[in-house]
Length: 227
Image 1: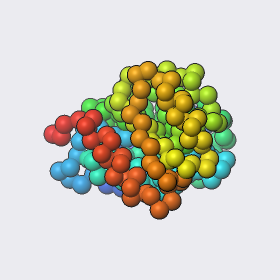
Image 2: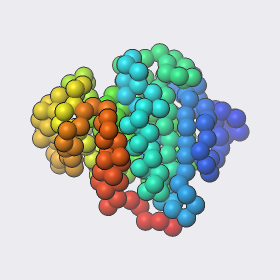
Image 3: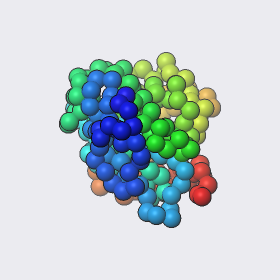
C-alpha cells in the first residue's frame, strides 16, 4: 500500500462523498466513500462488494447502491469499489481469489483511517463470496449477504464468521436458485438470520425500496452505540 501522504491513498477518511483511488495488489482500485449526516454517525464503516465482474457487475449496481444508502442512513461510513479489471480499477478477473485481496486492501485503508470503527462487510451475488472469503481472516462486526451465489461458488468450504450475519434472498431469483440458497443456509451453524423476499428476482427490480427497509430493520439491533 502507498503511504498516507499519497494523493491516491488518503490519510483521512473523507467527511463527505468522495471518489478516490487506493493502491491494491493488482494496481489502482477505484472507490467511492461516503459519510452519514453530521450527528448521525455511528462508529462503524461498511465495505460493499459488487456482483460478478464478467457479467456487468460494478460498484454502481443498483443493489450495491441501495445497500450503501441504507447503511449510510443508519449512520455508517461507506466504501464501495470496483474489483480488479472493472471500471478504472487495474488488473484482471481472478475468480474471486484476487478480488478477495482487493477487498483486504480496501479494509486495510479503512482500518488505518478509522481505527476505532467496527468493520462491516456487505456483498451482493458474487460479492457475497468475496466477503465470506475475507471474513475468514477479518474481525468484523456484521456480515450482510444479498442473493449469495451458492450455485456458482462452493460456500460450504468456508467457516461461519463469528459475527451477526444477515442473508437476504428473493424467492423468484432467476440467477441463483432459491432452494439451493435455503439448503445451504440450513447447513450453517449457528444459522444466519435468513430473510426471504417474496416475489423478488435477483436484481430486486421494483423492490429496491423494500430491500432498503429490510436491510435497515435487519441490522439495526447490531449497530454500535452512537457517540
